[in-house]
Amino acid sequence: MDFAHSLGLIAPEVTLSVAGLVLLLVSAWSGDKAARLIAIVSVAVLIGCMFLTAPALFQGAMGPDVTAFGGQYRADAFASFAKLLIYGSAAAALVVTPAFFDRFGGMRAEYPVLVLFGALGMGMMASAGDLLTLYIGLELNSLASYVLAAILRNDSRSAESGLKYFVLGALASGILLFGVSLTYGFTGTTSFAGINLALSGGLSAGALFGIVFMLAGLAFKISAVPFHMWTPDVYEGAPTPVTTFFATASKASALALTMRVALEAFGSQADAWRQIVIFAALASIVVGALGAIAQTNIKRLMAYSSINNVGFVLIGLAVATPQGAAAMLVYLVIYVIMSLGGFVAVLMLRDGEGNQVEAIADLAGLSRTRPGLALALAIIMFSLAGIPPLFGFWGKFVVFQAAVQGGFVALAAIGIAASVIGAYYYIKIVKIMYFDEPAGVVTGRSDWAHNVLLVLAALFMSPLGYFLTRWLDGVAATAAAVLFLPV
Image (cartoon, rainbow, N blue to C red; front, side, top):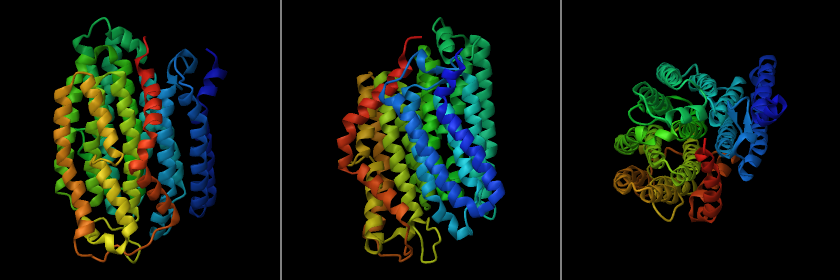
């Protein structure tokens, strides 16, 4: 084994690890007064890691040359695609953080460090080629996330969300670990390639239980029904920048890991797990849409929206073809940017004293008091609903197209019909902003970072986004092809 070659492949992880440890020492020595400087350095580190990761995607890296440590880690095009989303989302979440924490007396110095370590774990999840790497990355991400959710110690909602996330996350990790144990016991290996090869000869009852338990544990991480109940409470209670981090970077890493496990490790037995994924997809679409209708808090509505969108992504997974996997990646990029724009808009909803406005009723008449913010939020809501000509429509279109091409016409038809339910609560937000009498609550102003990110997200969601379709479809197909290499 060439350790020098392996160390070169894990350059992004080494960079994040060293930077996180150094910044942790800086935070210990300097205290919270250095929090902004640590956040700036953390953003620079994440952007640097994006540059380290990007070449693998654009060169279509795959095969043994990008495998490190005996197959436990893979720096291939698929991992690069996921990491670009993860690191970019984490950097954006850090950029909008200081303005939020200023009203609580300043940001804590360890906050950016936890984001770095969370991103480190997420990157390992995306690059996992072995069950051991999978679990180490998952737990590193989870431990950082539990602390981030409860970082506002003087806020009971934040403490509650952190506790709920910890308890339910520990349960999900136990379920996943039990599935890992069964899979190892009945295949004799922890390598994804080895598991695929072992299962290609037949599926025993024990291995089937291992697949079920592993998919159940991963369903918690991606907020798929029926393992979704933690999501609204954690999204509402956690600080909004943390919720932004969970809805973008964490979601991207969890879905990337689910694709790795399902298509790479269990790909030879797709028929065994397809029914589970189809149920989770349709249930997530319906439950997410119906659950959002009755919400009065914008963050809880976005939580149910995330559940709903995970259902559409899982339709691509159920197809289990390169076209389905590529459609999942296209949808994931569009969804991450939509979520980022949505939560940045939520961060900009402030009253005259700078307090966060979360009640949907308080958005009444926003188009007359903050027309720019209302327009950007309307674009994002229509895009989340998948209404053409906004770019959110393209994500749903490619997923349904992959389902039809794969012979799952009924699944696509049910998904299209169920998406109509979700359009209701998105349009309701727009109706409140444009047709109700002004509530006069959202009167606060936001800083330049929020405005820049919101404008960029709104432009991406506008019809201008269609100019990127050829390029986005191409890189998604390149990344997806990695998951279907012969064992």
